[in-house]
Image (cartoon, rainbow, N blue to C red; front, top):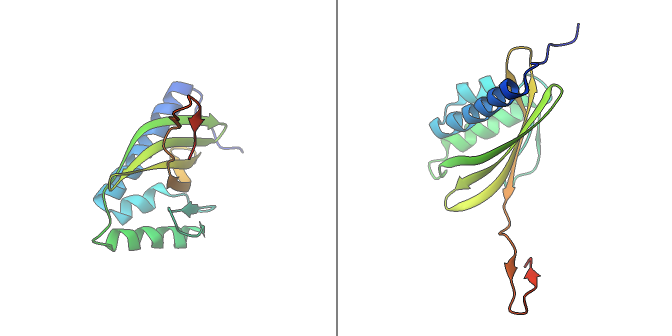
Amino acid sequence: MPEQIPQCQSMDEAALIDANAAYYRAFAARDLGAMSDLWAEEGCSCVHPGWPALVGRTPVLASYRDIFRNPQQEAVAARDPQTLIEGPDGRVFCIEEVGGGLLLATNWFRWSGDSWRLMHHQASPLALAPSPRRDGKQSFH
């Protein structure tokens, strides 16, 4: 029997935004238990900025354990979430503020029957918006 997918788009979106916020709360608290509760049991992957791809629940959670143990790890705050929900998959795109820098993050969740579970996290540096050149044209460099 297929998993039931929530029917109300606004409820789906609110629950997805809440799951995303829970991810950042767990990160801020350095709470590996809460972080573990958010991740799916299978099909996990993660790309931290500058890291190679991590595939599998065990390596992904080990990466968070190591990040949480790092006393130099700067706080991570998220803002401007945008959602995309297609069937059982929900993605949240947001801006992460880390140590004065900005990252663009994608958090991919899957509906597990009663909650959104994280399948993939990826964050990469956010390019600055194009600035006008003296000749009036925009430059992307």
